[in-house]
Amino acid sequence: MADELNRQEVSDRLVAIFSASLEGSELEKAIASVDKRLDKFEGKWAGLIKWAEQKYGLPEESGAEEVVEETEEVNGTESQPEVREEPVERTNESSELTREEASARLEAIFRSNLEGQELEKLVASIDKRLDKFEGKWRKLILWAEEKYGPASEVPAHTETEHVEISETSEIEQTLELIISGNSEAALSNIKKMVSDNPSDPDVWNVFSSYFSSIGKPGRANACEQKSQSLS
Image (cartoon, rainbow, N blue to C red; front, side, top):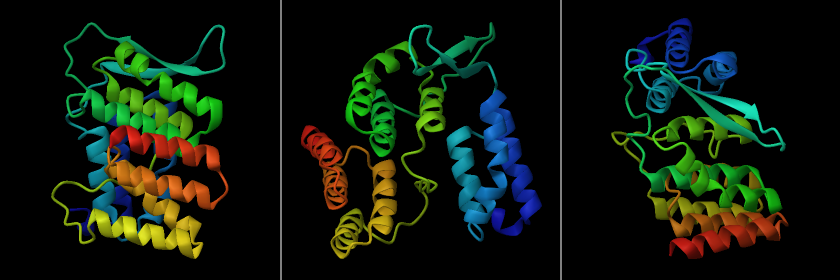
């Protein structure tokens, strides 16, 4: 357990996880973030390692048979992930994700970091991206997080972790934060809920309320429409 490890051992473990699953600029960024992650999750290193293993896989499990790289389109400004396939046997990297889950995670990333026409364009492109990168959705999500930022900065709960606060209670608490004007804390809660339950219409309603409270009606309407589509 990471509770028994010192800072250097936890750092080495994270580097091993990243090195086994990533390469190039993605690997460099991940390794460069290790110290910052250790500082941010001081005393919670067990959860940090679980999050890294869940997201990138155990070092011994990964095989760098497929690599997603960001490249510029010839006649556009948007970077697209390209996949270089090696002529070796490989496992399906998206085996833990259904198409619906991958779609929801991409949409959560886009809606958490973009707005206006750019947001609409990327949301509309999700199905096409999933078709193009069938079997490589984990890499596609990683690319989206690297390019636009994560939907949540908090490591996701594993199924074995005990969650003391129910989803309904979290929503109520977040609404209270919004009403009281504590936007920063409210946004932190919302990002976590979107990451954990991207298909819950109530979560998107709270997101809509948050954007309304900070004067962004466009994004509020987009979240409200998302909630209605999931109802």
